[in-house]
Amino acid sequence: MNTILIIVAVVGGSGLLGGLMNFIIADPQTETPLDWWKHLVLGIGAAYMVPLFLNMISSGLINEIRGGNESPGDGSKLFVLAGFCLVAAVSSRAFIRSLSERVLREARNATKEAKEAKKQAVEAKDIVISSADAEPISESDATTDALKEQGRSLSPEQRKVLTAMTRERFSLRSSYGLAKETGLEEETVNTVLSSLMSQGLVGRALTPNGNPRWYATHHGRTVLALNTHGSEPPEMGE
Image (cartoon, rainbow, N blue to C red; front, side, top):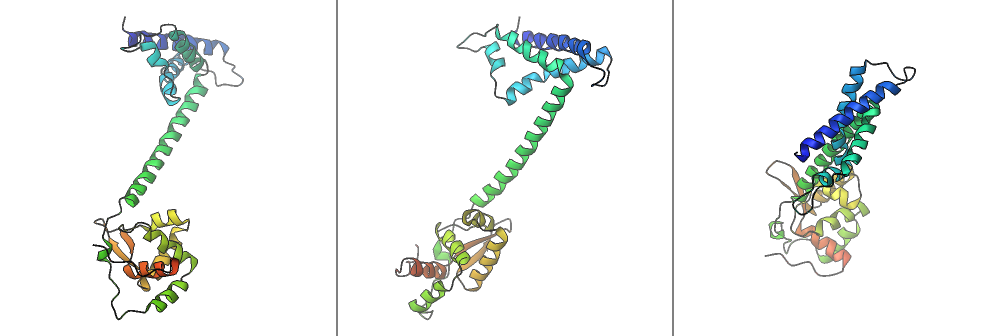
């Protein structure tokens, strides 16, 4: 006989027996009285939810019963499966409610995680640009001393955001990604980006979807480099 049919028969039989046991031991003072056939229906339903429960707890019981190409099935595990189904059927109402709530909770968590992953994927899909696309500083721009002074006037938040942007030299960054990296609130990051942009330290571009992405200009990299390492301004990229 096919193993799957045996499993189906064991689960169904256990559900019937467990439903009948539940009808016999049901306490009318603590539970709403039901007709005997309703107990059987609940018992069978609860029993057939057991494979779902086993899958959720990563149990390999069904596969152990079925076996595979390399190992034969273990028929003795049918008693274990029958025991699970009997327990579920005897406590059918509580088991069904509990499992249903768990499935819905995990479904909500999965949806939330999927949305978070999608948002992170959008942030991770930063558009690569060459720093040569940023405007270089001409000979008529501020002197090195003035650039150092501009760097010293940066607030801790501005310095933190600008530093985060220069760690990835050729990528555009989202405010969400910068907030996550710096530990600042996204609203604070947006305010800082606006102030840095007004000083010519960062620039803004748009993705094909119209979402803003930010990058450190050559001016911004130079100011940060002079105030971090005391080095000469970085050379332009190819």
